[in-house]
Image (cartoon, rainbow, N blue to C red):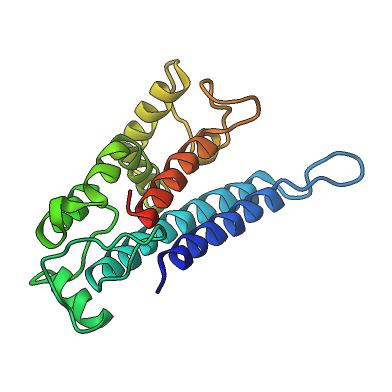
Length: 208
């Protein structure tokens, strides 16, 4: 699949999930929210998980395409050390003796890139540049999937760092919808992370 299609698929998915979040905060003619907080929390958390899955799918598809010799959006042909016969074969090569590839783990993806692509590019440089953001996103994902004392503490730590003030008992919704103190007016913490993911995705698709 051409890399521009991979990028488009990712961006369409992100847009769709952001619309789901917006729908959770719809207001009636009197300016009151139509749905309660429980539904809003569901929209935010489910949409965030959907975006995270879309990111993993983008990485997998893009990686496999490069191992198959598909040129980047800019026409670059990545030098590779493998010659899979098709997508299924490439996937089996990447999985190896494991049960699956953890595409959410940037270190794993970079390690695979260094094995199968010359200098690990374009994954090596790009994923390392957003490693800290991916780590934060995994913390938030874990809090969505199974909130415990451990995930709650980790979420508070991320929130305290991002918002610049001690935070205790923060929820995923409260964090993601909070205004980013370092962003443009109206930008949220979720917007902040999405900007990093989108820029990285574009660089990967371009082979830069």
